[in-house]
Length: 222
Image (cartoon, rainbow, N blue to C red; front, side, top):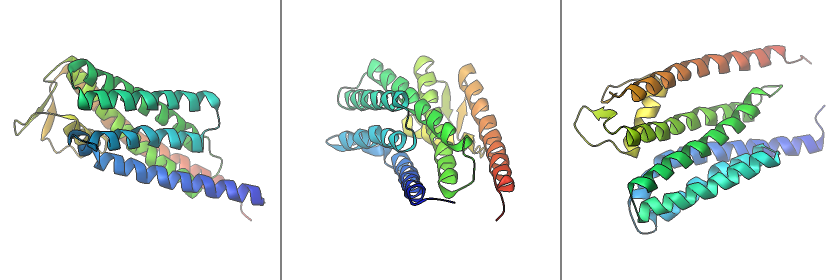
């Protein structure tokens, strides 16, 4: 039987997961702010560097996890502003590397939260959805790093230059295995990681559904 304290905790985690999911969706939609100049980059990176930190502090009690995500959040904020106001090849590299670490920590926290749950409740489903989206945006940073290391790894059929926004779009198209074909990986590492993301997207869906169905089936009946 759920106590009043358990009920309050459940409501807090549900609220945290709702806010995290909304924040991730807004982050993926507001990236153009980072290219507008003025206060645009400041607003974007302040928001971006806060959402995973807040999410981790709400869902994870471990001090090491909280400290790691806080440090990486500060790093993302600093290098993001440097790249926006004083752009350069090394500043861009710093953005890609710190973003991968920042996303990787959030992915680990969400995996722990989602796949260690004993029962299926709404906040677990929301966390699993957030995890899927974070994986997609993490691969965008991975693809950007690959393109930085090996320029021309991705080619657009229109001939347009490939930037971060295009790689975010490409990553989610690949993760969902839609594959429009307007952006093509031509480099060896680009092709390898694109294939890996496509397979991961399919496996994640299958594994998650199996996990949730199994938890639901094993739930004791009243």
